[in-house]
Image 1 (cartoon, rainbow, N blue to C red):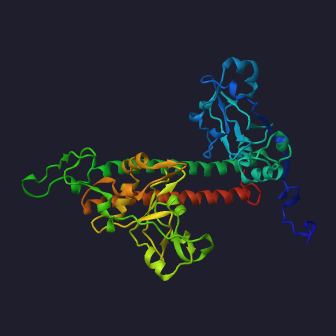
Image 2 (cartoon, helix red, strand yellow; image 1 turned 60 degrees about the vertical axis):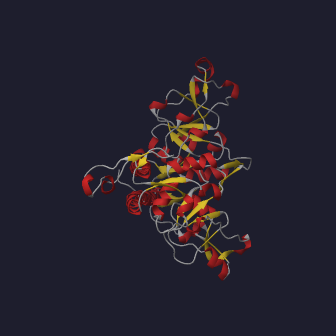
Image 3 (cartoon, helix red, strand yellow; image 1 turned 180 degrees about the vertical axis):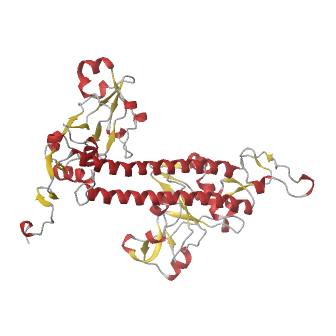
Amino acid sequence: MSVSEQRIPEGFVQSEVGLIPEDWNVYRLPEVVWYQEGPGLRKWQFKAKGLKVINVTNLQQNGFLDLDRTDRHISWDEYEKTYKHFACDEGDLVIASSGNSYCKSSIVRKRDLPLLMNTSVIRFKPVGDFSKGFMDVYLKSQYFKDQIDLLITGGAQPNFGPAHLDKIKIPAPSNPEEQTAIANALSDVDALLTELEELIAKKQAIKTATMQQLLTGKTRLPQFATYTEGTLEGKSKGTKPSELGKIPEDWDVLPLRSCLENEKIPSGLYKDKNMYGNGTPIIKLGDVFGNDYFKPERAQKVIATKNEISAYKVKIGDLIIALASVKLEGVGKVMLVDNLISDTLFDHNVALMRFTKNFNPTFMSYMLRGNYVRSLIASRATQVGTTFLKTSTILEFEVPLPSYNEQSAIASILSDMDNEIQTLEQRLAKTRHIKQGLMQELLTGRTRLPF
């Protein structure tokens, strides 16, 4: 059936960009939006001080500029003579036009000014009574990026400019009040997303500080901070000196070797890539990099023999550790196996830490993610292109350890904090999904708002 023969819903018309409400228009971008590309500044023009210059790296996903990282300025004299008309205004939408960040956008705030654009950055303003809010929403949407992708040609990296923008089409309500109503509805969702992101960041910071205090004994939980027997009842416990500094007097300092079964950190099973696809789940390096806790449903599968399954099977309570990474922060990363739905193996690119019954695995996972152990890893990892960490080095790490009961209590508190953060992250993901659906409805006119 041809497009002309397809049934068009009542109140809609067929346009060059698809079905739109009959009281909407399809605008060429230059009709409703003014845009300006930054000048092609040269390296020799940049100074240590002067007027700040936006680069594509300063544009962030959260919608605001990150100018703390800018190291580019031009002289005020050069600005006044040549580049003054490229200065940004408060409220400008700025979009990256090249590189891996192309189409990433930010809003210029008053506190960012004065500010100059560099090449590969384009600023946008609405023309006439076209709603700025609607312009911002549309140019930050996937609909805009999809049109850009169809217009740009192949090359070393994506790149677009005014010639491409001249061909962009925007379907929009003809009434500016409806444009604004759509923008306000989506802005309310953005405000909720920002609020959730800030709350998660705050909770993460609180958890990090709590880990630092509890894992070093600088802060004790009430039930472990005082004596409860004999003549010392009710008095706070003291500290004692150690090679790691002052620690609680009832804590021990032990090498990790003495905490592990057989005092070993075995590496996993090697299988050729053509053996993957079916069979038994296997934990890979990417699982460890991406998660603090194992996600069985995401694991790859590999064909393995019964003997291999017996030799390389993980258990609940095991820690899987990454011994190599391109980046330093990846090496020594640990993941706790706290959930299994079937026999599961571990790959040769990771290693297994299985603790004896005197050590709480969840507590040990936090200890290995804490600042103290991370500092040991940073000082003792080997960097030759890829960063490596030897198991023999890990085995000799000395860590401060409380009793098993205190380990469990600390682990419980930190786990509760992790669960709270995870709940917020799930809510954030759900809200982002809702926003995408809402954008699809509102920017196509399938759902109309009162205005």
